[in-house]
Image (tube, rainbow, N blue to C red; front, top):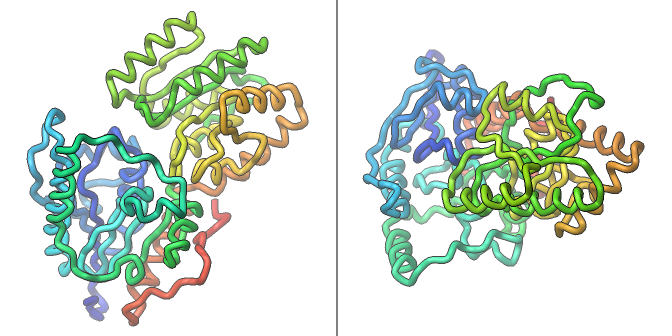
Length: 407
């Protein structure tokens, strides 16, 4: 329980199983939760592995030092890349996190839900943690193919979680990262406030006339990102007479997929350019050079890279599904097929008035996703939760977009 002593700051535990340079959204959320709260509360990060704070400051745009927060390290199982032991890590972390929960006035999971056994706050990265439950309510990603042995292994791992019996869906605060996620939860009878993740990219001021008339794609090089779709779309544009190239920014996650993409790029004769990973101001400077961008991952709960492209001043075209469509929010920029994408891009580029209207629309959309907006919203929600005396969080009947319109 929270002490009423005036000289004691409330204690907040922020839980992140581990940090990974190959992930993105949850790591960004965890770092900015610490940034938002460390000067008001006594913050402890509970995690399992050492991580390079300097790297993740650059990666996420935070400005944290080791003096700003404490770190409590929990044990983890050895898991070399060749041994798929990650399913065992979850229940181990959950059991240990439950023991830690009593030490803090407020417990916050930075990556989906965690059964603490006490009332807590959970920042949702996606809907995968709900499994098949949510399938009728939303277009969830397909389940990864597993062998019969792997399925048995995963079922056994699920049985190792120490369930408290609390209905955390309704008794805890579940924070959605998009209205799409919140609406899916609402179909389950759960009201969830919406706080958009922070996207701290600061663009470089380059006049539209001086930008390159090429396309840029950014993301991790992995099959779920569907990079080949972007290559095919630009190929259609070139066949239609548009003189343009595709620049690909991202780090490799799947080596075999990268090999396929490199072979595909070579077969195109040089107009697909693999730039490699870029971070911080170097990434912002590079993205700001381009007039146009393509995003190709479907079924995303949010999409950090989409917002980075918007903030860079690109006219962004993307799939008409889930959180990505919510970010772009314009029919002329959304597509469901390669053919539709190429047609909409050509119509926009050949109509200067439409092009300017789309640029104006995207500037307004980009303003919604700032680090200040995230920090202010988190501080408000945490203060509200700490001040409440009741054991049940009271929210409005519809999803709340906290601090909407803040810049």
